[in-house]
Amino acid sequence: MSTTIDIGIDEAQRMRIAEGLSRLLADTYTLYLKTQGFHWNVTGPQFNSLHAMFETQYTELAAAVDLIAERIRALGFPAPGSFAQFAKLATVQEETGVPNAQDMIRALAKDQETVVRTARAIFPVVDQAHDEPTADLLTGRMQVHEKTAWMLRSLLG
Image (cartoon, rainbow, N blue to C red; front, side):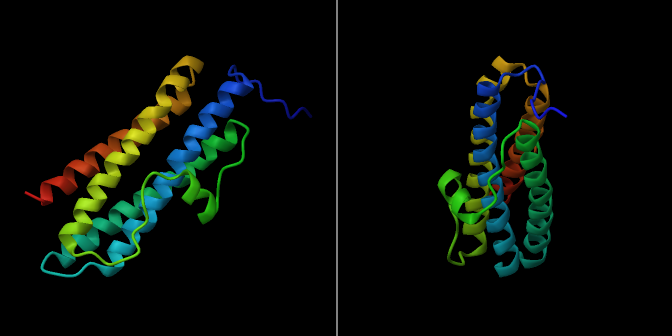
């Protein structure tokens, strides 16, 4: 059985796409962790609604990290899977404190937009390679993150 990957995208293009997806995976996982931490630690008059909203968001992000990692693997490359690797690759910054609810919302809105930019940055090589499955994944991710950022911004007035 051959281990050669012949999906119509050469190895160099697949590698560049996988590198971009690895950055997206790192940003998504970091945002997942931050959102879950905010879910655990949010307080104040909006507790019930924010606690539930953050849970919905981190649950969606948990599913997304698997899809992104599986696409990297389908392209023939290992997916990063450690905090050390994610720290090197991510643009989204970890939160080590416990901000107030409004600052949590601001941070998550900003981070959702960051993930959109990370996904968008991969598109030129994806388009050049005619990698429709990755383009579909990126489009879906951008739609989710843009909508989530809008919903979070709406809470800020």
